[in-house]
Length: 456
Image (cartoon, rainbow, N blue to C red):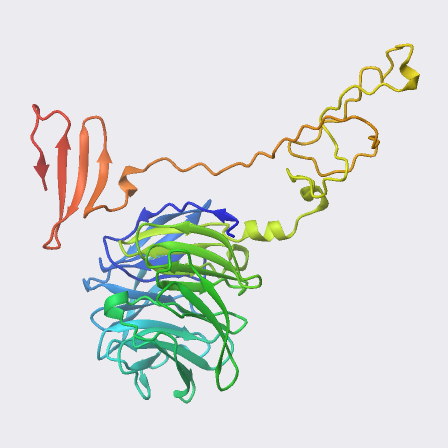
């Protein structure tokens, strides 16, 4: 049973389409899309804001962005170009540093090895190549997969690499010798043309491998034992659609997964429970955890329409619930043991033998117990005997719910190829995506007698 449902608010980031997403070493976010831009985002008070755009003038969709150990950004575009960007310390601006390599077919996946400074790419034709940041050389993995390599993930501590092909096979490679150590079919009859390119594949710091294991929303955890994969826990989502992306938290204790239908689940790996969940109306193409130690409770998402959302404090609620104090346990609205007497807000009149003369002492008007916090009923009362007549009034604790943020017109999601950009008493401005791929601006006034609709 999920403990909490969370509403995430997606804001416009890129024009359209899927792209790349990552956290940089300084805590900023880098994203890319089909508009050919790399955008840098800053986090302020739990929300993200755009701070800079990188445009190298190539006018190609940027499929992936990954950070390097030196703080640079590696990008991969749909023209098969692998490029590196750095930030000028004098101007404080990002710019293209160099083109590292060009691949023989479109890259479908990427993984970065910080220890060896290698960028490994899975190609559409089934090949896997590693690009060296030191000398820009290309190193091939053999034998190649029979079809597109949809995902690659490097082990955090060992020299092994996992790859996922769209024929449903999972391979484990020795990243030094580039030889196959193990091959296993985890998705029979899988086809990326039917189910999309997105599948989940990620290593935790503890060496667990999360893999999309069925077309019905299953996500399996595997452990590597020198020569074979051992299957462990299996997680299941609610909408029973294929898990398109999943990432472990930096400490490996939590696993965040998203389906093609936009369902987002946060799993506790130790208890195999879903602790928080959310939903979105569009497929989520990628996600990234903030690796900064003091901020590793943040996850950022990018959907297939180019919208971004930040999930702040996504695991602190679960952690605080695991660390309840005795005072916290008193705030239960249901008594744990009905046979025990509870502290009451008020009890009825109790007259003892000393009150026969009606001297109106403290007992003659009944006992008024100290007022406990609202919903505080789980404390034994030492002042009430079994023979006393007691009226109990149970008040449930008030649960505060997070209010939804106000509607922002300019950040409205795209619906039926239309997005509302502005809405006032005079009229509205709507962006429309034509079948030709061009985006038009329609201006409509509420009073048609003064002006006719215009298209730009």
